Image (cartoon, rainbow, N blue to C red; front, side, top):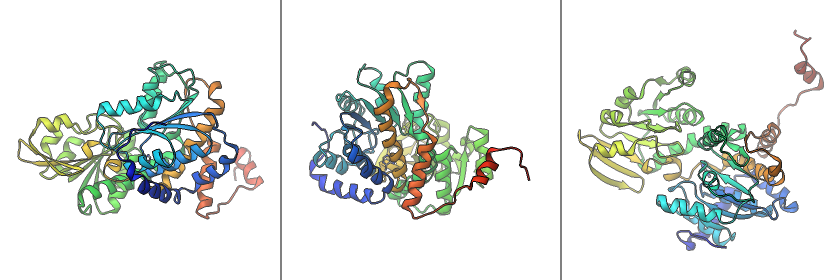
Length: 415
Ligand code: ADE
């Protein structure tokens, strides 16, 4: 076992925090109890490239209990929780290569180190590991999973170009993932990151949310709940209309730029806030990103207009612009919920990682017979996870009677 982490002495704190997360992840823990007996991943090498958080710690422990041999790296230079990395190395004996604040070079070195295991299955968040895997040619590989919207978009593009070499299960596209993790998880944790970094009062602020997908929807709802005036920008007419009907102001970024006190990008695309927008911003504007990569807010555009730069705290950089305005960038324009807070709460990661865990077992068992395509989660898996989550909350629901089933399946009976 090899590892590259920041500080092994943090292991005790990491272990305690993983256990805290575990107490809020009943679905994943129930799966662990079920599969630790049969060990379906015995002899299977799994390489993971996922934010190293306390919730990921619970997933790693679960994979290990099911028999997997593991290597791990972070999927974002600023998201690793160093205490968790230390515990996974010391207490779980995982080969882990991750620390908070790595350079671009170290980031890719860590991915390459995690690949050394020659995995049968990869777990990815953003597709960086999968792309690097495609530059090698490991005979071992049976398949991989992808956790996030941005990664699924990249992998579908690879499939379309005929470049995808092994099957991928799009965990992100499970309803029990994106309808909860992306909406409630990012909705809460992005605001949490902004508040932890700045301690500003959200109430009464003009909060501009760029993008009204699942993430934008969740953030808008939480910001409005805290008393913000939410202004949404969009490129998709249907999403823009939904935002309007949900009660938010909708306009173009060039107009929103003049109004916003806080800007949060959620689009998954680059160049969402550029030179002309930055030049129009109010003195004191705060900029944060909740999309996967740090390309949504153009940092080169900010730097071009900057005369002076000042670090306010670990997560706030002040830029004094040529026009005299001061603007504030949070978490270097990287995922604010992970850079400045702890990522999504354990309760939603419970379902996301239950989907990951079952998908990995499926790939270990059937990956060799699957085509190199991006696959959706089986509906039955989604339903099983939702039911288990409801049960963990002591919630019972109705089921269809046989006549109701017949009614829904037929077309003769109308009234
Ligand atoms: N992505 C967003 N939040 C996360 C978390 N808490 N753990 C792992 N991946 C995440």
